[in-house]
Length: 150
Image (cartoon, rainbow, N blue to C red; front, side):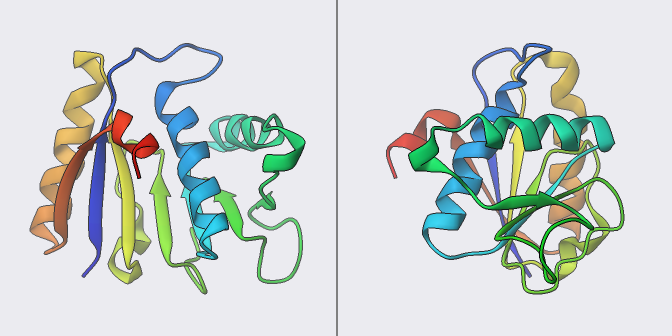
């Protein structure tokens, strides 16, 4: 079973850049620096393209090789972004930006998920937490600020 870490967000999302997307960029960068391939699962194509664009906006010295699923090199870049039919082959970490649990959650070693600040967005996060627990995953929660402490 996987280790699932839920990051508790303390700021409200904006339409241009949701708080969990910004944190997911940092986490994807950490995966790349530690040579762990990761899969970022988004709710839909528009969300995947937004996340892709946020990675392109990182400083040049912080570039993270990434691609949308089905694009890029055979086997994908170190960070692959998808919104349907996720393929965990060769991936160690799953970063979940969708409101549901990806079907491939059972083959991951580590899953990252988020609890948004607005109350209306916390309910889907609580449901995902319950489903991960029911699936037997090891669960942990961290404050989003702790990403900069590690």
